[in-house]
Image (tube, rainbow, N blue to C red; front, side, top):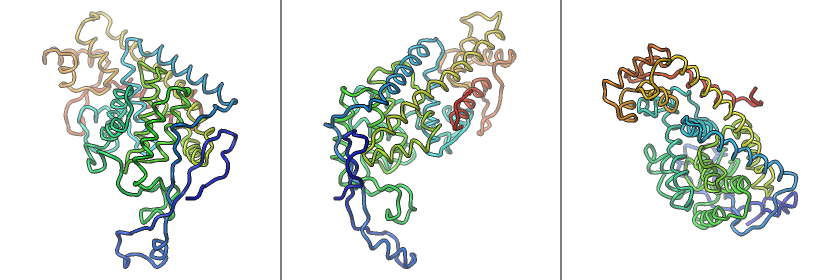
Length: 407
């Protein structure tokens, strides 16, 4: 094996990845390739060897420690002030985190489409994939106390099991690579470890994430970079890796009520995020720690704006619903519409355990008062839209997508 770098930079004591060579066996007919392509694939290719990190000791760089502490404090404060508010911000922020994580992988969709996919009104397209990422995040949070190899596999299965079951159920069994085309890994930007190394690498990874002696945000950022370097699955590594970040923040009790949309902060500077992963592989952990500290700060700023917009919408509804009892079905449906800004008849009956006639009357009342708007889904089924909430979610996504601080 050969190392890609010399001594670890900046005195962090973190090892760089090494490389090893393998013969490449192409499944393509040589007659379908150009001469240069045939010559290239005859050569060995080089894959990464991720160094074991479970037992490494290191100090957080002094000039980053204050930023990490402040970002961690902001995460915990936002969780504490938002979670017990009485409004369903947990589901709103979970959806926002999942959508931002998916957008990093170039999977984008509007808030209405995502909400329709949650209802089963859309089963294909980006919105459906984002909803599956919501399920992966939910699995990660449910398994936060026991993050092991089995639970990580379960997270990825929640993401892809319904559409690509052949890619789930365990670690990949073939070489994968990033960039450079689909022909072979010879021109790739990064070639993760050979699949024969995954069992040992993931065992070491699980041992690392089981540690409790590392500041939580630092722990999550390094764990994420190591996971993305190992790339243990044939697909879904980025989204699963960011779900693990949320699980680690929950297990460390930095968050306990909500999912702070850290991926929205990473998305805001996605080039910096990718550069930080590259630096990590050279043995420099500073950029990935700094990237997550910045992402956490931005997530809180953007998340607070989303919370403000939702509360403003709810206050406006309250004025429109004057004269209706607090325990009336229409009021209950209005609260449900915050968590589910696209509703259908079945959802209201199921979630509120009300009679069908009561559900219809409540929906009609909310339409009459200007809280909801009736519409048809792509399947031509009748649905009701909470347009103010959908607008707040789309505004959140737009702020995350821009590369400047939100106003």
